[in-house]
Amino acid sequence: MTLIDAYGRPLLNLRISLTKPCNLRCVYCHAEGEEDKNSGIEMTAEEVVRISRIAVNLGITRIKLTGGEPLLRKDILEIVSGLSSIRGLEDLSMTTNGTLLAPLAHELKKCGLNRVNISLPTIDGDVYCKLTGGRLEDALEGVKAAVDAGLHPVKINMLILKDVNDSQVPAMLNFAREVGAILQLIELEPVNISPQYYMTYHKSLDEYEEMLRRRAIKVESRKFMQNRHVYHLPDVKVEVVHPIENTDFCMHCTRMRVTSDGKLKPCLMRADNLVDVLTPMRQGASDEELAKLFVFANQQRKPFNMA
Ligand code: SAM
Figure 1: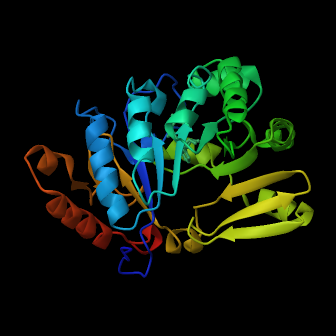
Figure 2: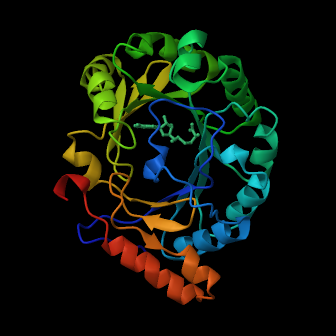
């Protein structure tokens, strides 16, 4: 079975925040739309796996782990093992800043993680440090380890910021080509950042899409991933995440989020329609009762540009 929302959109993807804390301080971070204050509640490994199993029984086929920084979870290998053993789950991936990945990459692969996205807004060490507070070398080691471990395809998430890193796309293309990764260009979204920050640093990705279209030998649309475009250049692939003023993006959304404190979040952009599953679970709700909460949350899904 697959859950379909009121706009005909299937629910296929779950994006689970495993924790709020992060070891970096990225100035642009949307924190997956979670509120700033920490509720102090975090799902256990067992709870993450149970919620995911219920979701897969309802038709979810792909799970992405996020945060905060998911690799800060001491039980990350247990979580990945538990999730990868869910029958019916076709794709298990993680988005990470990569700085803690090097010693874990092979183990994560062994435990069943299929692939990773590594956030890397630049390969200029000074700019990296200013944007994230971290050391570029640590992230680069993480990229190398992910490639070596076969967490394939490795995607490099490059969030574009006007007059900060927007001139570095060619350098990032070369880097992705050299390491054998896909470059993913991401548009800044106005979530958990100030309107002033957004106005100053937001840049439309149209000019990159035009350049990529000219150079591509093939262009794909990922229908069940917000109709994102993937540009196949002769020796490297580039995916573009272009949500702003793009009705197509929301109309092809197939995603639900789970916050680190166990709430189903139907839309990154909204904080007024969350559905708590962790509290009922801790109070003894059955799988059937929890599945009904998923069905209810799915009914709350609405393309943001129509909200
Ligand atoms: N710490 C992990 C990481 O760095 O990948 C997971 C959390 S981070 C919030 C997940 C992804 O969100 C990253 O790829 C990052 O580039 C993206 N991101 C963060 N803030 C964003 C924003 N304001 N707009 C769009 N994407 C953003």
